[in-house]
Length: 400
Ligand SMILES: C[S@@+](CC[C@H](N)C(=O)[O-])C[C@H]1O[C@@H](n2cnc3c(N)ncnc32)[C@H](O)[C@@H]1O
Image: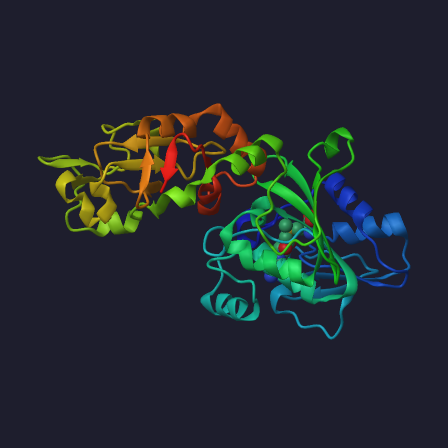
């Protein structure tokens, strides 16, 4: 098999044990039609045939002629799956689609991107190839048909997959197997999705110990799932949410001025000077403390004019990290500096709070346990919806 540069078309080889696990979840009626999109050498079709025999109609599809090596007993389709319009539907669609946010890892000509955007109702922002592969797969299933993919876990919580989650909830029943780090050498946390067209509800399974031979364990069953964020059940975390005030009730959440905005501002300087202070980045935010000295951004701005970047920079306020790798990190910016990153939280009208106690609470191990308990390592950053729901104890914040 010829291997391609991995960043070009989202090529990641599926470990054979993972193919085996997914094939053990697969089902199709005898004589049924089975499709592996993004097939390359079609490892899923080969494993399925090995396990269940040859009495099916196998189809392999791949966009890259150099990567395509279909078995002789499968009907081969050299095509872009996302634009492919066959005159048939399938009983089973399984495989490992390409991953990658368009524009980041994946380069596409603008015309193709426009075509994708127009074709997929779940498309959101830059989106991600695997989101489009999911929608396309669901559309090509027969009623009662099964879709089985391994994809990154980000869709469970990220806002750009909200439309996709709603779509999946509307179209059928979804089982999610959380695998954690399933691809050796890659940071991505993975999930296997088994979707049945026409059913209802969500089931979440723990499947991190598959390699040690432990079978998946059911963690959560939500019969009326409508596409909400998929969070892990966690007793202590749920208790904190029941007792506390959701952060969004007490605070308005802003994001810092973006890097290009700061860079392009006429008052921004690349050197220190009178009246200038460093523009702070995430690296200046430490648990309980702001490092006002180190110029990590390499940029300086007049402190007195910081409000020109964002009006709220003039007010001392709470800063919470957005990309701190599975941790909540917070500090009080008492000096009201200009920033280029992170969440900036301003109390809403009538809210009274004790900044020091609040900062200590947000950096406390109890909050780390809350965050890890509900979101594990699904994505390395704290997203706005996660922050909005974070519970604040009533002793620390009062909302009139
Ligand atoms: C993650 S690899 C999976 C390879 C193989 N199925 C496996 O599990 O080892 C993704 C494959 O998708 C192919 N691919 C990328 N974009 C595609 C598209 N739009 N349509 C069809 N195949 C595509 C790539 O060429 C690559 O072979």
